[in-house]
Image (cartoon, rainbow, N blue to C red; front, side):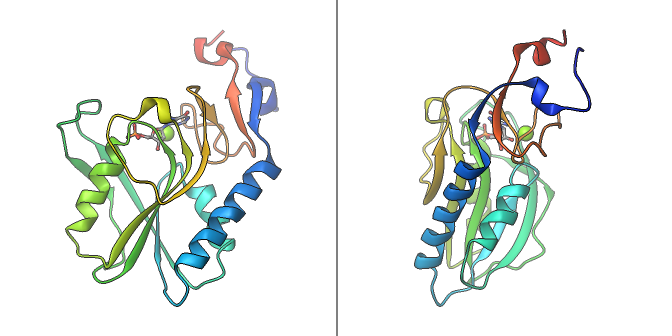
Length: 187
Ligand code: IMP
Ligand code: MG
């Protein structure tokens, strides 16, 4: 692979959203959540790994107290709408019964993982569950999901950076970018 390990920018075809754009979007989501949860202390649940940077920035844009927790999940039988199982790799430490839960996701793609996760967490009887996702690929949804706090729509392209990976790398790239095709083809 003709990849310069020193400079990630060389691997990028184009920037979709720069730092300022991301910062403004996360600030807007923080204001929306702050206004909606005044007087409450929501449990912010990030779905790892993709949401780790978004979560860190989002909670600092909220002007209300909150707690944070993290989950790692994987869906069985991805791609089939009927398969409603989600496998928990790492569960919450928090007992969410009676709590206001906000699920923090990096990107909504098919929606299968998220819809399974919501169903699973509902069984624990939280007071409420809402969804906050930074990116949404509307062309690719397979299951209907109501997003309460939505960041940006992205076109049907594979994006990396700001927590999102390709083969586990580029999560630390500070902007949202599209990779050069040569990176995928391993040229
Ligand atoms: P789904 O909604 O269950 O299909 O899964 C969404 C997950 O797919 C996200 O949490 C990401 O980890 C991954 N994903 C989807 N689209 C992209 C992309 O464009 N770049 C990086 N990861 C993506
Ligand atoms: Mg991923």
